Image 1 (cartoon, rainbow, N blue to C red):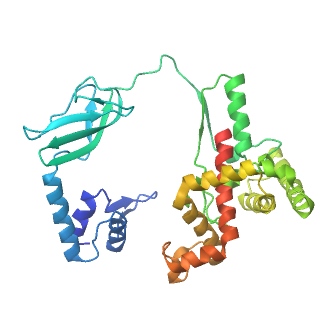
Image 2 (cartoon, rainbow, N blue to C red):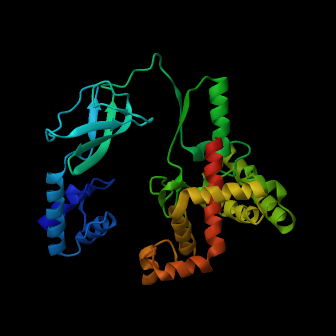
Length: 350
């Protein structure tokens, strides 16, 4: 790594070293830094372009009227080095404007500075000097959801169990919260590592946590789909009984296999007009990120979990090959978008 590339990364907030969970200090490779900077809109592909980008950043920083962010802490307004002819105005988070003073309401506002022929704005954070201490202590449960089993579980705790725990502990015991371990989506396919701290996405949830019978369309299963789901329920019940007796350990692979078999049957049930509209709204709200995630899941189902081993044309999410694969795998992409939707809904209900 050149000094220029390292400095360019640092000024853009990109770490050049990190420490693993085993305490090993790792230097980030130049190729990774170049790729991350490119994602930030910074060209560092060559030493010359990195030097140009660094010089441009320094010039822009020196020429700015405002820092990237201004903080008013406890009513103390920081000193801003502004031209004498500058006018300053605060656009309040809740609407309206105010002067830059110590009486600003707590919130995320926007600071506007204008000079003849030039204007700039920056986030302005008005924060208290110290967060207030609660009048009394509060308590709750800290749980790993997979361990919160009930008679209705499928061999490990699910979002239905979470809803029950939250309702029971809050109403019967007076608990104030339930704190959870990570519920993020794992990499599709067999799990090489059961740790929830190695997710494939920090944005979308693992459908492994779904309560299958709580999905509205489950009640409308018919024919072979109904028989498939009921068979999975029976097998999951046997597994769950072994867990509750203490005879077995949690078998994530079996639970995942049974749930996906049943979920694929439920996915075939047509959505009612209202449910279809809700699903479409979720897809639109999540935008391209959800489609990219669902496409990646579908491709991983075909080419395996290690995307670096995929055909080269499929490693770029914006390539024509990926667009073509998305069309060819449209039912599978839709399935993974649907999984994200029903999982999001069950967590919201809990």
